[in-house]
Amino acid sequence: MSIKLVLADDHPFILFGLQQLFALEPDLNVVACCTTGEETLWCVREHQPDVAVLDIRMPGKDGLTVLREMRKEGLTTPVVILTAELNEDEVLEAVCHGARDVILKEMAPRALVNCIREVHAGEVWLMHSAFGTWLENHSTGRALKKIVRCQTERLEMARVLTAREAEIAHMIGRGLRNKEIGSRLFISEGTVKIHLHSIYNKLNLDNRLALALHVQRQALK
Image (cartoon, rainbow, N blue to C red):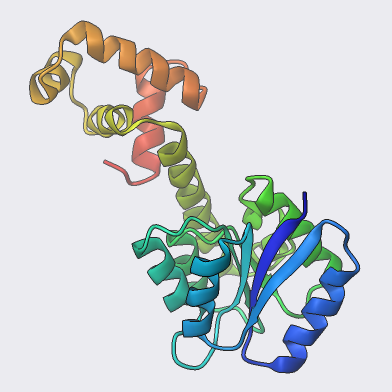
């Protein structure tokens, strides 16, 4: 089954180039091309694509605004941000709102194709892409990379844990004991232990201390 794509860029030439690029790939299917943020939101709602590729700067609602509104509406389409230049604040905001990668327009077309396939497969491709090289070569970028890594871990944690498990993990990060957690959640100590065992398994952690450090590192406490 092909990967449905919605493309958004305010430059028709870029859109045409992207269409031509993806037309060469049998597993990629462009279902809509958009030049404004408003049009992009409508197309994401209408087509429910597998991946949306958004230019970060568009007239009216830019890519970041579209991404924010998608999340507010509960639209879960994975997003790849396309940009001509990098801005640390914009990159961080994009990641915090769930963008799976940031691709520079100057990168090789194959990088974007590979990125889309990985993102569709459920990967957060950001830390493995050519963008990672840029981060390594800038002092501010290295600090951002650490934040991005923590954000990626936090999103993964939110994805694999149930709401109750996440609640208990937060409490462990604050240093609460099982009895206190049980009291606050109106459940038994034994139930807390069962939840903890499940959390350890899902996050591949060995013990309570490892979980507390994991949570604190992500600023979830």
